[in-house]
Image: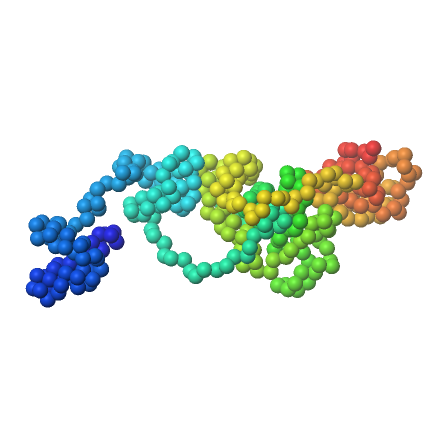
Length: 390
């Protein structure tokens, strides 16, 4: 029984008791009305109705009327059937998004939730814990970017890492993709996609993963003097890196991953996707646009802190890569990752014997040899020369 009907029944019993005392002249109308918590005129009106109609005269007839905007029974049944047949494992918020955007539903979230609860399909949750104050967001887009990875069974029997790069100011996910295993190259790829679309940003907030930071003592502070390949690239781009020291410190990205883990596997299953290539295509083309539309918030300020990327003496790919030095052998070759890379003849120098060169290992597993800012040659993943220096 709803609270309003319970209140009405209690009010009836209380009125009957006070009406009897008033009839016996043990209470005045004013006293009885005050005890019932109503105006004197109201008590007199109820007394007349009770005398003429009995207990029925005390009922609130508005409760028996159907609201003018009440949903037809057919619409209620349609929503219940839609949830049970197509989205049985979805939570209410996720189901409502599908109902609204995919099925063009017109009802409010509260109505959908109440309808499912009244039908006993979902349970009412207990009240959440006490209020906690969140860290204030950065006021403008591009001031702080979060990057993190989540290992999860995104499709049945297949565990992948989802790499997400998002803005602190408005929760927008700029880059998201699945990889077999998180690492330096996947982090490079996330940053590259952000810079190419939006420009250089001010700072990057990450966990203390070994590809981000050197941490001499487990659980201790990061060594900011000893640069990883990733941090070297960020320093070269002028992007400040910030290390998080607890899951609570990464609360914003942790909550985002919780939402993704609740929604994305169900939508991948609904779309019949089982391989990582199709999953990345679905994520990029179908899932992310609607997800960002649903969960983006409005930044405090409208200005942007992004700075458009303009090609420098080195291309972006030549910064977001592994860089290692090698000494050239007598036959103008170097060894790298088990491959022998042959430096081709050029017009700038007769021989590069004993010269210190720099190997660039790119995201797509290709390689290049640089002498200063001059590229001597580019190679495929097997070490075969496929592009000679200009």
